[in-house]
Image 1 (spheres, each protein chain N blue to C red):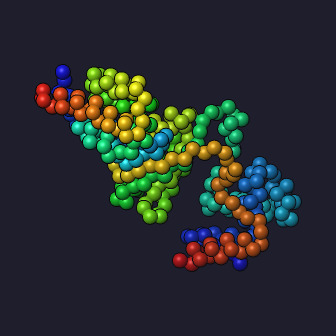
Image 2 (cartoon, rainbow over the protein chains, first blue to last red):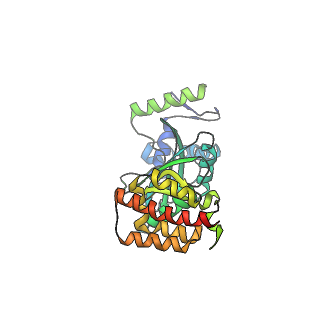
Image 3 (cartoon, rainbow over the protein chains, first blue to last red):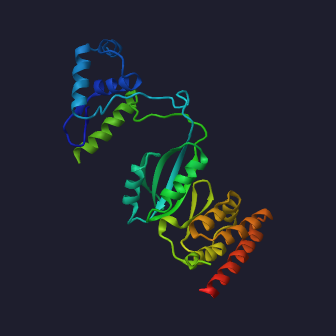
Length: 179
Length: 105
């Protein structure tokens, strides 16, 4: 079974997924080390990675910085903005442009919500940002904010190295690909 | 005395009522008149939150530009009212000043 992407431009198989997982764990390891780890030739690793880079599956290689150890002081908060549906797109786009906002999502439960991850120097700066820049946006009805007290996990996209889960992921992607 | 105190403000200069850090109630006031009305509508917890941070005084003095009312609010804060006492006390102070201003202009 293979994993098809939405535009059908590339089909990923179990080897590709394992390479992606290995890269997520350590993107600086050599093709040889990765090949040894996965039991495949380093040239295969190279080819697969280049192909995934070419198709934009691997978007970039970056450093994960421990902000605390780097000396950065600050707080993280999860902000839920309840909006007028007519304005939600605009609110989400404007939020996305603010340097304080790291991530923005829309979600539909009882009301249309925008969920954003926000960082600030301290609680006062966080409040000032929300009061001066978010609350006045047209279409903002209410805001709920929770300040993060402890982080247990943070990752971008997980590839689960489990045969059953891998199959589920593949099936899910096949469904998308066939639409 | 300046009639500007009674003007309507643009949206970005309105007062936004929060219940705690980052938790916006959805209520705002873009003039002294609207501020007076909202005192009766918002939760007393929101009034407590803003009074003891000095937010009302700051907005009234710097945005509405009424130093006299800001001073009255500061005096009210010094009495440390809470809950409904705060709500009625704040309403009284702002209403008195608003009535005084509207009778002049």
